[in-house]
Image (cartoon, rainbow, N blue to C red):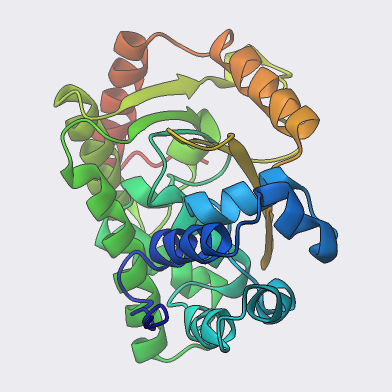
Length: 280
């Protein structure tokens, strides 16, 4: 019988590798728990690999090839998958985001990546990497805009974004860029493609003052959360941690403006930028 073919990691790589893993495991007659035991991981972790919600890393791919007798298939494809167009700290989260059915995000200082315009993204990356070449910046912007194609589908994923008022008031790229960026967010909301709400300065202290937060939900796998800092990020699957982060997002929802009032504030700030009245 022919073995599993090598996969093209540019086309839904984790989903395909996960399907091959499930096929190879079942062919050996092993349960998820039985495969996980020699790897010192849980059966649910194997399930997440098979569902494509977690990336297969080399430390697991090599012994999986040995256990399942797959002739180096998972090692080869794992090495290819590691060549991501996204920064290392965000690659796994971007891949999970691509298959999520719901994304809930609190953006503390920036408009979320999925909602950014080209000019806004360029200004963000130039601030992050002031000495980068134009080609490097262009590649980063292209990858970010490509992620936004998730929203081409009219209904999936559900995207619920809470924008801190600081993200509206911080001028990124100047007034023209900011006005365009805010109007892009408003257009998506008015087209009923996303839900957007603003956490106003008047809310005072809130549940996520220490940083931004992203929650990912899936049809056939447990939810994940993603936390991020300068040049670092971590995708979390611990149920207690995800539950705590979900509660944090729920508490934020209790403090935000209504969708209608949020759009009114976005409109007001956009007009200020258009009229040259940038806010400190």
